[in-house]
Image 1 (cartoon, rainbow, N blue to C red):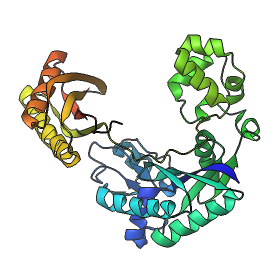
Image 2 (image 1 turned 30 degrees about the horizontal axis):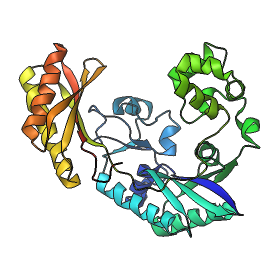
Image 3 (image 1 turned 90 degrees about the vertical axis):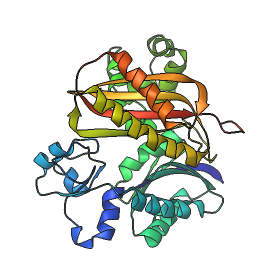
Length: 346
């Protein structure tokens, strides 16, 4: 039997869960994001396929989504419901005989299997998820995590697709480098500066050129991506978080320092609740500030001693903010606490 990597991705996950809760919404354009109010500052978390047909996509401001699709149904994000649905799906995946499951998020996971028939395993997973949850999923089948992840998009919705070393260049060679999981627009622009525009270009690119442009580690990494290389096995080691953070986009800009200070104390209190549930104290504080109109800054500071004290974390965040010496109004604040490692390490 051969080792295969399956990438399982739930189709339009949040919107699909909402349709299960509200069957009357089936077939209508649905946008899930923020508090479900398109007049507020928030972004799209998921758009149904019907909404995507109007050009609505994840990360788009809700106000923009409303202009593109005024007849869409806007719904608030309901984390507990989505987390419960996600856990049911992951239970189905973990029940696959001798499977190794690496959870990537609410709606996706890698499944490592040793089999002579990965397509049968994929179909069994799809049937099991549908029976257990009423949700559809797409499955990418590959001989590496990179190829499996990319294959999933070719199988959407509710289908399967296989991408291996044998078919990599046939399927991917003519596509832009941004079609590769792990390469964004900024990296693609730098590659294009060296006449590397397609996956095939990257696959045959000179390694020394890539190392000179991106450094010895990332140059090798991008060269490997060009050939679809990645992990051949799935790491099912339980994920241990290194930090907990909270952030808020404010409906009205925070123009006064006192407003910012109050907001940072609120966020620090929320973060400490997460730390206490984790049982690991804060050792470094990260601050994220988005000034008007859309300029984002991040800063961090290591604490002199670890703590669960929200006031100390907030005070450090305030110090980081004051050091910016920026008088522009604030539209978003975030506080993140890096935790001490667990007893056994990461």
